[in-house]
Image 1: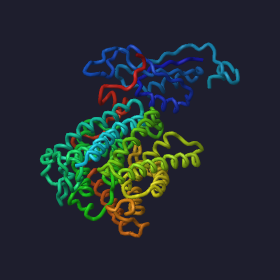
Image 2 (image 1 turned 60 degrees about the vertical axis):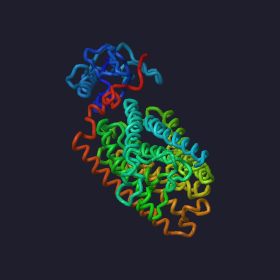
Image 3 (image 1 turned 120 degrees about the vertical axis):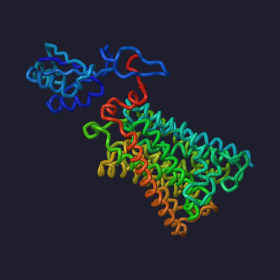
Image 4 (image 1 turned 45 degrees about the vertical axis):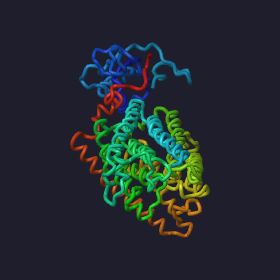
Length: 113
Length: 408
């Protein structure tokens, strides 16, 4: 079992979601996060003062998958989020030790899907 | 000159001005949060731009006596529009009080159209489109219906506070722009939900409040007619809000606050042309029925044809406005307003036909000219933002601002 954490551009969320559905990955958690980016992002200006803080808005996806779903999920995220510009984001893959479905107390790979 | 009348018209002018920021919140709550500032901005910049347009050319093109396409040019730059009454429009208030009251109508009307093209129009194109639309659609139509020498006015059309000039007019323009601009991207997979429903409620409350200036102010005096307009306006809005909630309750199982708000606004729209000509019972009927028509328009007709009238500017303002204009031809009574006319139910079927003709003229004229203006601006600078801009949102891309922070 793997836990995929992906950081993507906020405006790419819809496309990534669509690609994930196509790959039959339906269970995702989404949150809005701030992070240090290497790119400039979209400038914000308030009463003439340019916003120069380098925390940029991103979307963070968390997806737990069984091993055979790992590569299709990664490919789906790439298809949805890639523009080849700086700031497209990153995908992290972590080993997942356990997964419990609260309702049934099932554990392991049956609990993921 | 009457000080009570003058005071009431000035207060009413301020009330009608408030309806534009109220509309901004009504619409702003309905869009996704990445676009809320763009809607507020469009409403506010209209106040700025059209106020200037109005005092320089708009008032003269609309109200200066003339039998032509526009009003005359004699009042350009408010030349000759002074502090003495101009009896043909309002005999007891300064001419400038009438002028500034009408300015607020000229502002709110193009603002209503925003509901159709929200979330996808380029700001620069929007500005040019709005200015042209005010000059070539609103000003002539306003002249025909309300101006001295206007041919629809001479034909006997009844439009107390702008059902035709404001609501049908803006509503038809909304439908045309929604169709030619096309649907928002990704609409089928992801139905956009209103990002801030309390804003919608706040906007509705302020619209309701401001509408008393709209309708009761259109009596242009602090008199019985103003009171009648006030009472029927309030009653129709209440009936329509209730009626929309009941329709939802029966059809969908639960009434929604969004529904009550939509109904209340539809009721305000529908009573607008009738407010000075009908009594309380017709007002209730007008209110109860308008929600039925508008509900069908936004939940059945819109999905059927697939145009993306984002915030239902057509479905509420045009449909509600047409019902109001026709209902005026049904329920108008000289017992309410001796200066008006009787409608079909009071023995004068001709009035209904006049109302029908006025609606027809407005729909055709506005649709054609709006289409031409749209195509013209589209040709030169492009009306629609590109897909990436639309995905990022208009707040950041058009204005370099965003409404909400994540952290302090």
